[in-house]
Image (tube, rainbow, N blue to C red):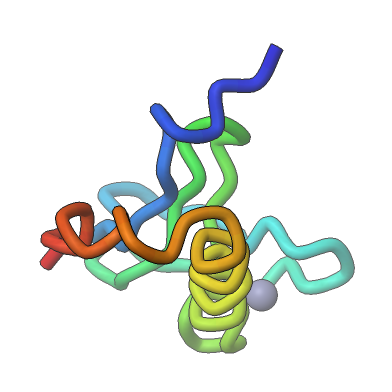
Length: 78
Ligand SMILES: [Zn+2]
């Protein structure tokens, strides 16, 4: 069972070297760089390759589809 709403993805500062989770990407993410993180999948998407922004856009698009009115209060990520 997936708990999508309790594991919202978010921007984090990476504390250890990792790789972009996009298949066929594998761009390195250095510690100190920002990345878009999906806790439910333990997946990091990098900014250098642009997949972080893409993942964020995808997520926000889904969220707006699902619930347009309630999401404002949850926008305090930054
Ligand atoms: Zn990537």
